[in-house]
Image (cartoon, rainbow, N blue to C red; front, side, top):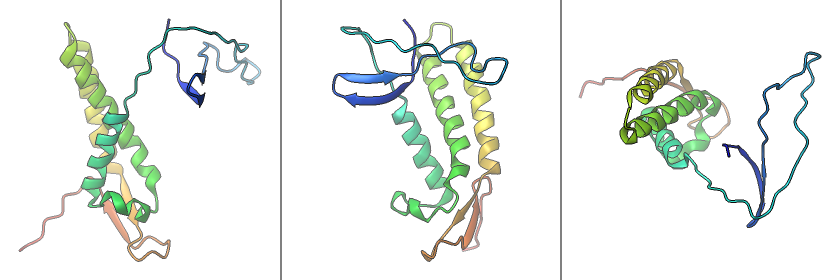
Length: 150
């Protein structure tokens, strides 16, 4: 029993899992994974946090003022990775707290991830190509609210 990351889904009945082990690197610096194994007729459940990650991704695009169809305009999408992960973790722990009989630990983690998420948002500066030439024309900070006089 345990949780294992799915590495590859070969077909409807066959998948490859990553085996977790304590020593990622031997003292000489080389990785030594456990030998491979296989099994049949195993009971399993697959869980995903895709909906939470998708929700956070949409929030990030809204904060940047970018429609989903215009994602390709972002020249440096890697700056969204950290806020997306932290926002997703915050949502996961908030959900766990809502279903827990003793939610204190989950709420503490949710609060931590929310603070880290907000910090990552303030640090994120998107470079956007508005004219399609591959060069960033606009920089947008996700941690700044722009006010315009009407």
